[in-house]
Amino acid sequence: MHASRTLRWSQIPDMWPRCVEAFEQPWCALMSEQNGSRIMRALLEVALSKKWAHVSAVLMSLSKAVERRIWPFENPMKQFQLHLEVLHNLQRWADDLAPTELASKTAAELGHFIHMNERHGAALLNAAKQFPSAKIAHVLRPLTPDLLKILIQITPAFDWNSKVHGFSEPFWIWVEDHTGALILQYSHLQFRQDDTSLSVDFVLGIKDQVPPSVTLRFLSDTWIGAEEEIYISLEDLIMPSTASTHLERLDIPFLSPQALHNGALETSYASSIRVFNSIQSRCFWSLYNTSQNVSVCGPVCSGKSLCGQLAIWYVIGLGTSLTIKEALSGVNCRSTQPNTLSLSHHPIMRQKHWERVYASSAVTVRWTS
Image 1 (cartoon, rainbow, N blue to C red):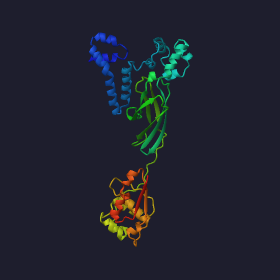
Image 2 (image 1 turned 60 degrees about the vertical axis):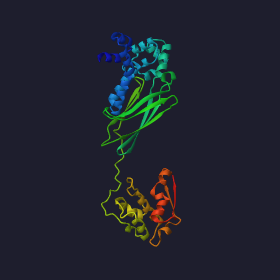
Image 3 (image 1 turned 90 degrees about the horizontal axis):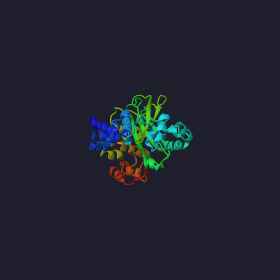
């Protein structure tokens, strides 16, 4: 076990030949080389599925370390094919400068920092500008008292080089809670050469009270050191107040079809229903006797279609002296739905439904979408 672990970690600092020679187990070395990255990636998927924020970040760093054969604490510019003397002087004289800081300097300044000439500074500057980075902007948008939407705009901030970046650059972005222990939501992104920006929306659930903050973490899937952490304060965020405009279901007696006060309607409905259910009885008066706007919400098969029919009878103005056929003569029922397919399958809008239930073919049914 100790030998296998030593072989696996020896891949990172380029000690591979000495390690193989020391243990004299080429087959073990080959197995460790082929499966080390797979094991790390498998552990990373487990951590992401469990929403473990800190563990996922650590495993992401270790996965890239095994694949790149570079320790996470080493200078990230070591991932470029720079001259060994340039890398040595960079680690010695300017190791505290991040790639984004290097990219903001001039070639002459970089050459001075690493105690070399401007030509070496230009090579370092060119590599620093190709190091993957991004500018991230976010907007908080409260939706409901318990839902918060975060709109994120990600803009690449590096020079694309097909030899370095290939066809795409994969990134991870996730939102952590204020403790940094739990991933609330995450997404996997792909930057391509022609992409100017990418948009990601996260909708977070707010349970009892608004947390003091959340953290937005942006990490490259392949580059060590290409990550960013953004602190988002929620202390001044104002969420919508809890709405209490909906009506509670009243414990009232169920109405019978006699409440329609129309002999023809009572006869038609008596063949299919005995009494109106609680939802229909609750909104009967508003639908059948007034022109008020009514929003009826309920699950499937809860009687919403009949509520729509009651509203149609009010609009038609069916009186006791008219039969159903006379009242429906020349009437067009028009409704608007998101798509024609869902509307054509709705019970209210089916021609056969009217002919069967109301024994009338005089009504013309039309719909728009």
